Amino acid sequence: MSNTHVPEPHETNEQRHPTNQSRSKVTYNGLASVISVALPIAMYFIFDKDRFKEDPLLRFATILLPFSYSATQYLFLLYANWKSNYKPEDTLHKALYYSFNALLIAFATISILSIVALPIDGWGSRNDIVIHSVILPFFVVWSAYLTFTINCLIMKTIRLTDVNFCMLIALMMMIRIIVEFKSSNREYRYYRQMPTPMFRDTFLPTIKRMVSILTTMLVLATFMYAFIAWKCLIFLRNM
Image (cartoon, rainbow, N blue to C red; front, side, top):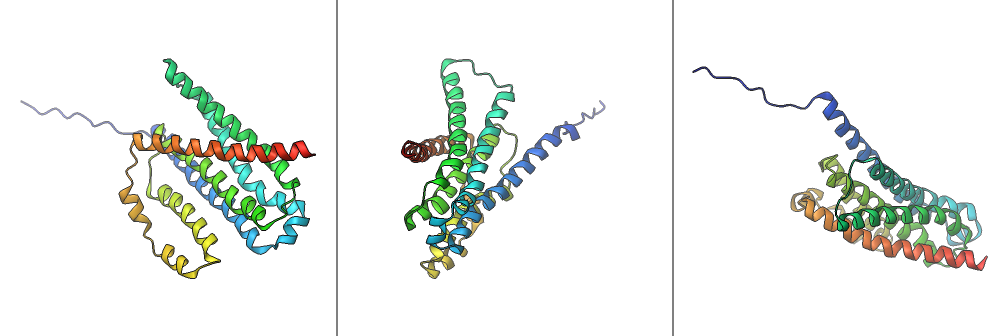
């Protein structure tokens, strides 16, 4: 008997091209997220309290990048869901699908309104400056970045490469380093020595875990954006 050679299936350039494009988008998305968080924090350390209180343009520049990033990411995800071939069949999946899209619309709308409303409202205290230049940019960018990345992973358009995951961990560590460096140099040395690959090795990106992370993050993001919307409504009511 003669052995018959059966050619193994392989990916064509056309099949690999969309995946490479998706990986590039996630890489650029990660860089944009780091810049969107780092710039407001840098402005917090560069300018003093009185400058923030007196200059509305400075307040506008502080929140423009993170909230623009947030609105762009949620609108992009909404557009991707609308263009996808996924059509929920049963009632439960339809409810989850349309609820997710409704959250994306709400988050994008609140982000756009915040760019207009939050800078006009004077940041009178140091706590207000910290909230608007450190806390809100971090959580706004973090939630949008995680939603984008995990959604791509669940849809299997990319793989969780070392670059993408280390960028995600670096984003979280960078915020803690910058915020705590001002008060304790010992904390900075500790975080600097934390091995990022350790997180990668212990984190298993299963679909079930990613869905649970996405669900938890969306719940936290809902409360956060509700707080932002409440601040915007109070300001608009007092105008």
